[in-house]
Image (cartoon, rainbow, N blue to C red; front, side, top):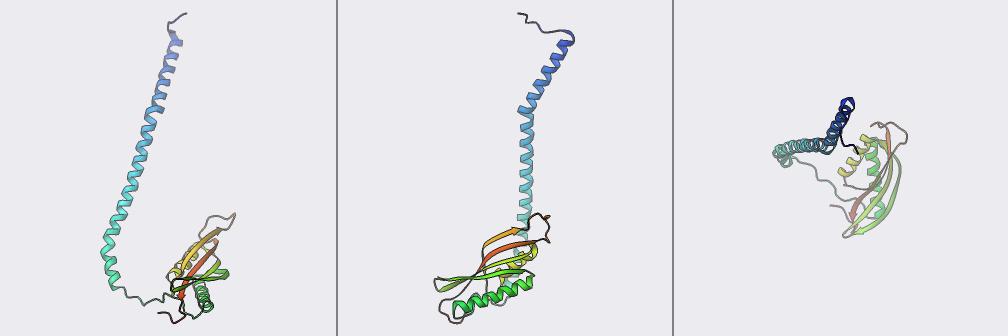
Length: 191
């Protein structure tokens, strides 16, 4: 068996091939993982810097927020639905939801009154609502529901984007949700 290395052109080609093989192995085994690790660390550090900047801005705005909170005089909101019965409270709630929808520009497809439930000293009144609106309009409607008089809770929100349409903020989205509000179980006047 001949154990001598080839010489001449054949030996040079073999030497170049072996050198390239060793360099490729070193690249894939050592250099590439180190570069990837460095990039991940740099991205994580960048994300932490952005988070730190946001936190510093929030801390800087805290005194102004506290000052605004003290000077912000808002009228007292009615926290409970008016009405001596569940049906009257549900009717008042439906009227409020329709007014909010018109104000926000939302098209209501349907509105169903859910059975009222006892919750301690209160009765929970629910409406199942189906609506269609562009994304920003739908968000404004949800914001109005959560800030309205009386305050409503949003539950079971399901969004259905229109099929085969470009993703655009002006394209209507179908949504179904449950709006919940409370009335006094005693049937008396709300505070």
